[in-house]
Length: 241
Image (tube, rainbow, N blue to C red; front, side, top):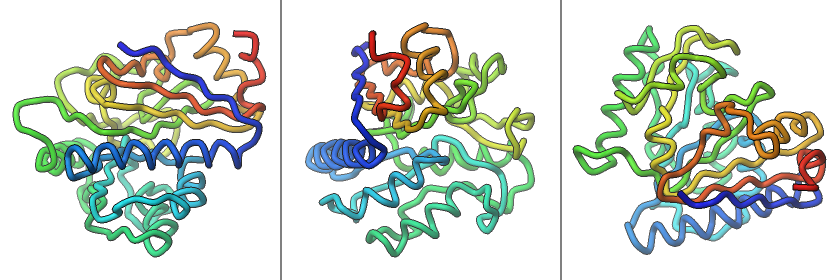
């Protein structure tokens, strides 16, 4: 297991710049080696960071395949659809097509059906009979320390039998979601958390300094790299680490 690297920069603008330069480098390496770049997206503030930063990078966009670390089982038109946010903000801003996004079927009525369908869609892009190995997962963290849709004290924290699990009782609405499970998350070549603002300072301290066993603290790639990119405000309580 590789140690984590914590990068603290002055501002949100610098977080975006640092994040997207790192994405550019990881994508270049992946495309040179594998002729494809497989990246998992999260919602929340990451959508803003990527919308602002990705148009400034140099990459072979046609080689990108974009998955979702978690997704809400809602129509694409819903404000709660993570894919819907990226569809409206990224497509047309950078030369990505809808077909490059591996997305849930919004017409399926249950999270269970959506999770099974998403596993089948993912399987097309990874070698058979092995855990998916993403080049990069871009992760967020909530004020309770959750990441993806893996929440504190939830039974899905111990799920190891499937790549993608349904959740129907999310503590944060909407209740119906799908999420990557920890075996897949920790099999990634690289995971990145990018966080800004004083509102994140307490939970950042609890995870990085106090080492509480919260879901975000369980992101530990077994054969990969882990980065935390923080602005000064988010890192306010860990500067003496």
